[in-house]
Picture 1 (tube, rainbow, N blue to C red):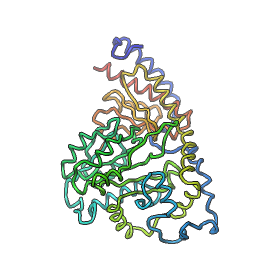
Picture 2 (cartoon, rainbow, N blue to C red; picture 1 turned 30 degrees about the vertical axis):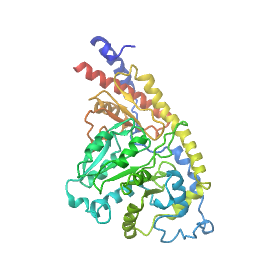
Picture 3 (cartoon, rainbow, N blue to C red; picture 1 turned 90 degrees about the vertical axis):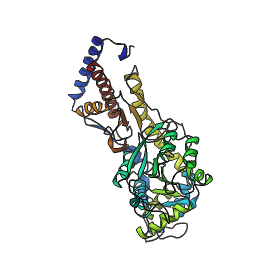
Picture 4 (spheres, helix red, strand yellow; picture 1 turned 30 degrees about the horizontal axis):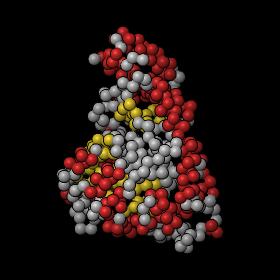
Length: 426
């Protein structure tokens, strides 16, 4: 099969006309398909539905420490929950604080504390320092960028590599004392699916920064493996302790894509200095999170980490076919591969697609006009601006397999049409 670069102008036009005819047929069907965000499917939610019936009377509300889960108190969370997350995250129990249902909320509150009160005891609040900046590995998670932008921090993009953020770039940027932190999704990064290498984690822990530099270690996909494949990532909290920078990082995670996306459990983990500083705020901010939901989760995972692993295997059996539909369609429909590339991650929730430079916005528009909604182009970069207009975050989990097959076929047609339009206009 010829690449587009090898085709004559007449061959390119004929190919465009053929694809346009296929596109027009789909457009006439009035499709309404949505693969814009990484939402768990209804089938994934059903896998945890028994949890809703686990607690139904006072007789089964007893906790290990006899905590009254219906009343106030237990600021840092039930010990059973902390022990469960200790096994999931492979960090000591004493480092863990249990929150509400949203790890993003916990990140926001922590960064707001750094901004308004300082990143630690005796450290100047970021708001008083003026012109503070935050590093944003890109492509990355738009909601991370949104928090920093809301706080008025300047967002600095950092290229992603197959081993995580480009550490040569990071180590150069952190020489600027105004750079106060960095967002990281260390395992199955959103959207690229890459995991941080041991060297990357150690360099993050060891690099020279200002004292109030903080890494937001969002371990959202720590147990989200697919098809039996598995990535391992070093414990950054431990590496920071070894490097003499114990307060450099705070870890966040949740069960939002393990049990219920709107009613999971969020946690953070931090070394002693950061934990004490965070608790100083929490003691004034809340009397404690939803202990009924905490107890519900540990009752559902009654055998601890072994039950969690079995549950995640069940979810992988639901999710993996969705990834396979997208990836197999790409392999069949996007040959020859001279106009785009994509990732094939070992886990997580997304596939990162790079279209021909300068065409992603057009691809998005073509899909939208055909009734297929995708994540907005630019969302994976700070300020919503992809400098190459090429990256698209593909979220396969929510649509049915049938809907996904149609949506992906439309996407492939749009990718090729947009590339041909660009080539023929040059």
